[in-house]
Amino acid sequence: MGAIASAIGNIVGSTASAVGNIVGAGTSMFGQDQANRQQQQGYSNANGIINQGYNQAQNAINTGYGTAIGNINQGFGNASNQINNGYNLGAAGYNQGYNTATGALGQGYNTTTGALNQGFNSATNAINQGYGQAAAGYQPYVNAGASGANALSNLINSGDATHQFNNADLQANLAPNYAFQLQQGQGQVQNVLNATGGLVSGNALQGINTFTQNFAANAYQNAFNNYQSQRQNIYGNLQNTTNAGQLAAAGQGNVYTGQGNALSGLDTGYGAAIGNAATGYGNNLANLGTNYGGNMANLGTQYGSAQAGLSTNQGAQLAALNTNQAQTNANLYTGQTNLLAGNNINAGNAAANSTNAMYGTASGAISTPNPSTTFKIVT
Image 1 (cartoon, one colour):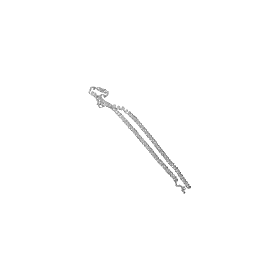
Image 2 (spheres, helix red, strand yellow):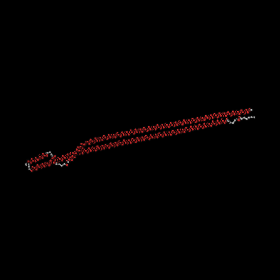
Image 3 (tube, helix red, strand yellow):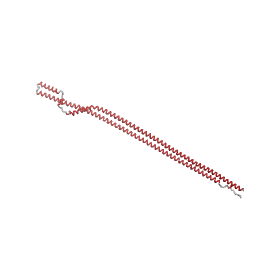
Image 4 (cartoon, helix red, strand yellow):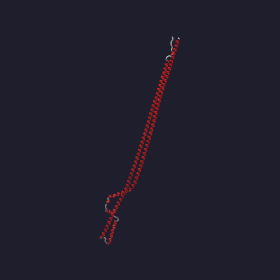
């Protein structure tokens, strides 16, 4: 009975020890399970923190990218406005300078033409006045010549130039003392004859007749000569007056010819001066327009180059910014993926280790009884 009781005690003790082992193993497994759950929760929390951090980082990257784009665009807009303002100021300056220069050229041209017109008018008046005075000096002689020519023409038209000497001309041109001298001469002849006693003789009559005829012939010749001298004097005086008028008219003609030549030369010089002024004015305007066009073209080229360069820089900066954003996001995603993968691997390893530990404890608790606990019933 004692052996049985001892065996039963051994059994009970061994059973109690096994139960205790099982209970301890179960408690250990429960603790390990709790630890494993907490560890997995920690990994899950870590994953959430990683995801949250990377989301925040990505939001910060996107925000910075948007701000950078805004700054680049704003800077580009400001620079473009400055370029536009500079171009407008430059164009306004060129326009103002061009207008001022054209106004100055026009004023100078008007001043030049005004001076030429004034000088031309003054010179014309001086020429007309001088030549007019010179022509006026000839005018009395021209008038006298015209009067002489008219008188000479009237004489010729009256037939005086072809008139033959006649008795009327003889009587008109005899000396006023002709009759007296004839009477005295005849009386002297008679007195001589009377003194010689031949008052009525043939010789006396012949003597008186001879004296009378000779005296009449001489008187006729003198009358004819007086008539001819008178006509020649009249024609000569008129001819001299006419010749003087002709010379005066020729001189006056020369004056008018000189006046015409002087006015013609003045007109030619005036036309050439006006032409030169107009040509110079046109050339200056053409050069001014050429320079203005060249300056505006250069300004437009510089404006276009500046805007093109600005656009190119903006595009390059935006492209670089996009590239940096893409690279940063790629690096961020790679880092996030690596962290999450490592965290998940660690979580899996921890779970596997915890499971192995749990099953190892349970296996030890249900192991084969200790041989020292075996018993046998002794009969």
